[in-house]
Structure formats: C-alpha cells, structure tokens
Image (tube, rainbow, N blue to C red; front, side, top):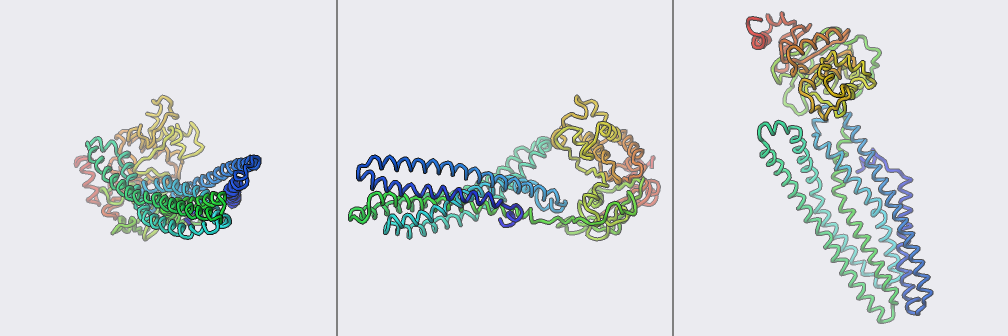
Length: 574
C-alpha cells in the first residue's frame, strides 16, 4: 500500500475537510443519547410537555444536521477514492506502456487486465470505507467510552471485557480469511487467462470441435476458484455471528446491571437508556471497524499486485545521444550479437554480424524457429542483446532515447494487430496528422487500395477490434500501409508478405523499391520468390548466419539455401 500511496498521493485538503465533517457528525450523534436522557429524566418524569417538545425539536435539528454532514462526507470520500483510483489506473497503464517485451512476458495479459481493473476497484472500495468508517469509527468509539463513563458509572465497566473479546474474535476470523486473499487473486488471473484464450482462439476451437474440452478446462479452473472462494466465505461468515453474540451478551449485561442500579437509586432511568445507547454505539463502532479491517487482506493483496507492476523497472533504458548528431542515415549494423529470451536455457541468436545501407534490401530466410524474427526485434529495441552491439546509423541503439530510435523505424510485426475504429484511424497510427492524400499514397504502395475502395465508406469504413472483419492478406497490407505512412528511414518487415498471393507480393515489393528513396528495408521471408531481388540475403540456421550474399551467390555457396530454393522453385529453375 505504501508503494501505491507514494506514486499516487491523496490530497491533504480533502482529507482534512473530510475529517472535520466526520468529527461534526460524530459529535452530533453523541449528543442525542444525552438529550434523550434529559427528556426522560426532566420531561417524562416531571410530565413537562414543553421540555419534551423543546428537546425533541433540538434532537430533530441535530439529526438533520448530522444527515447533511454525513451526506457531504460520503460525497467527499467517494470523490477522493474515485480520483485516487483513476490516477492509479493511469499510472498502471502508463507503466505497462513503458514495459519492454521482456516485462510483458513476465506479466501475462490476463494478469495485467485483472490488476488494472478488478484489483484497483477493490483498493478503491477499501479506501472509500476507510475514509468514511475508518475515521468515524475510532471517533465514535472514543467519544462513546467517554460519554458512557460520564453517564453510566459502573455499568460502563462491562466494555472492559466486551471490547477485548470482540477484537480477539474479529482478529482470529480476519487472520484466517486473509490467507485466501492472494490465492483468490491468482486463481482469478487463471480464469481471465483461459477466458481471453478462448475468445482469441474461438475460430480454432470451433474448427477442431474442441468446445467440450475448453469448457472442461475452464470448468476446472472455475471450480477451483469457487472452492477457494467458498472456503474463504465460510470463514468470513463467522464474523457476524461472533459480533452478534458479543453484542447481545454485552447488551444483556448492561441492562441487567443497570436495572440493579436503578432499583437501588444509584442511577436514573434516563441515564440507563443513554448509557445503553452509548455502549451500543461503542460496540457498533468496533464492529464497523472490524468490517473495514475485514476488507484489508483483499485490499492488501490487490495493492501488492498493483505495486509489483509499478515497481517493475523496464530493462530498456533511454540513452542521451541526440538524434540530429547521427553520423550516418538509414544504416543498421549487427556486431557479434548474441541474444536469449528471459528464462531461456540457451541463446536464440549467436554471434550475428551484418550491415545494411541506405537504398538496400536485406532479406533473412531460414527454417522455422531459427531466430529470424528475433533479429528484427532487436532493431527497435523490443529486446536488448546479451552481448554485442546493434548500431543504428553508426551509434549503439542503447545510446538513443527509445522514442527517438523508434521514430526512425517502420515496423510490421509477424502478428498484424489492427485497432477498433476505421481504416483512416489505423493508417494514422503511422502519421497522426495524415490526410486523405497520405492514405491514398500509402494504400496504393501497399496494394491495399484495391479492397479499400470497394468498401462502402472507403477510408472511413469500420475496422473491428483486431481487424477480424478483414482477411489475413488485407490485414497484412493494412499493417504495411500503416508503416509506409510513417515514411521511416528503416523498414522492418517480419514475414509480412506470407498471406499475399504471388502477384500482389511482386507488385508490393516493386512499389516499395520505387518509393523507398534512401530508406533501407530489412525483411524476414519464407518464400524464395520474395527475396530474389534483395541486395543481401542472410541465411539463418540454429541462431547463426550460415550464408550471406545475393540469390545467385547463395545458390553456389550455401547448401541450405539451395535446398530451400529447389523445394520452392524446382530444380529446373535453380
């Protein structure tokens, strides 16, 4: 909780104002039993109607005042907690946006969603209760003890036994229940993960008729969560019976002892009534405080999970080298780069070295899972290498500010992600102030205009979340057009032509080459036909570059490349 409060501070003036309002409300409520005692002792006992009416009017006024103050305090407490949750949610979102791919791998998508929604909501609810009841209950308890001692004398001694017993009973229940709070959050993460997987993979699940298997898998996780929640609920349900038993026994003891003092003349009836109300207020305050404390384990577990996100520092740090002072332009160089994913037992890339220059196309080809895409991820610093250097325009990529480095790069990932909105808004991810002319130019180069112009609203046609209302080839061309909108110095294509037919592939590559000017292109490809015209082809196998050259050179010098070419193009053509 301390980490969260250090990141998102509460506003002191609002807390002070809330405390003053709650103090006024507590004082007003504490005056009512005393006035009731005066009404009984002076008005009812002496049959004085004027006294009764005056005191009744005063009590009504105090009650109305307490209601207004309570309303204002609830409103302020809600505003404080809501504002706190909104700022905290913003902090978490901003932090997640700064994470490198390594940190995103560490926290699953489902867990991050739960932490930024459900966990923050739980903290907000606890803060609201704490600001209201957490401040009011101690005031009421202390004031109740003082007034009870003043009006009840020996009767109030019952509280010296009741309060410790009540606190002990509540403490034991809370301690037992707190053990399940963290477990419940972890199991909720698992449920969210399975639910997200089933939504994202719904087509695959249906295609393989795996609905029963997925329902069974989700059912097991759901049952596990339900069992843990029920165990926690059974323990929590003991709290109210414990409180009610102690409350009832204490009330009976107070009334019995008070009746004895009234009978002997040591106490007036009005004082007994007032004292019993004060004791009820004290016990009620302790009970409300116990309910707030009951929420603490869940809030603490949630705040701890949120703090884990806020305290996680990204491994991708900003450098300070000015972008304007680069000695070169549109140049990428790998110098003896070795890279392993976090937690991997061995490197995926080993001693990778190559260099590209403006106006050149460098293609990377090889078997599946050999490290081709990993090379591209190091260029925009989605990851950093373990050893060696990635130089952008002659400067180590680590020396640039991350935002400035990525401003030079147009990146098209292997998994093409489009965002809900329209075609224009997706294209403007590459250029925020893009115009219709920019859209037409980028879509024309990427061969996307062909299907965009067939849409009813053209560039303002709706794109569903993830681009699910487009085909795979259409999504790829949209992603390429988005990168072209940026007009970057370095184009990075991660197997971005795999869903295109041969004719579109050829046309798109020809358009890129004609429009690239002094930019450089680095692409991963699976098809030999895509890399035939590349100025440089890197053949990657087992994380190493085993061949480097043009198509014709590699046919004579690299057996693996020749084997791939023969399979795809035929021995006669090769």
